[in-house]
Image (cartoon, rainbow, N blue to C red; front, side):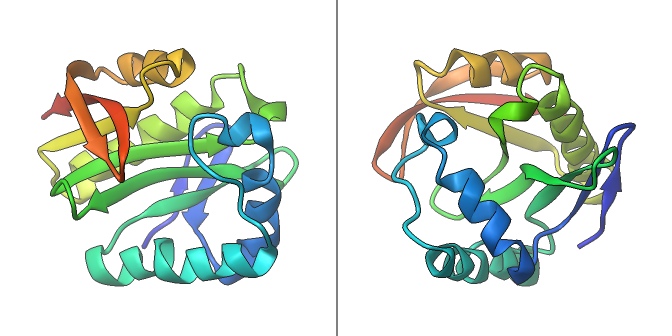
Length: 166
């Protein structure tokens, strides 16, 4: 799993040492509004890291990246690709701390992750899922060049599915 660099960000593989910072992010009601239940403890977050992103790296060779702000060195969220076994698709996902919303950082990170997917991984298609009322996320998917495809049920939640083909 390689690191990616943009003008303002470092996208690096997540590690167990990110559990506390990721827990703070996933404990913010503004961040989790369209995502699901808040994680209850740092231990829960560490378990999630072990069973999802770290396992994805081993299984697929790619997964979500930690997003580090170059200016401050601070962990500000995550972004990257994830293979969704239930849909047999690769999804772009992102989650940033609200202090960094509205600055184009999610777009910057997602563009780097998608370029990695297209050029290094040879992906021919990437999807993006969002809750239908999450207009900010939908606008970001559109800025990434994705087009609305259909409504889908993913993990028991109705989502809109956007996609791009290369």
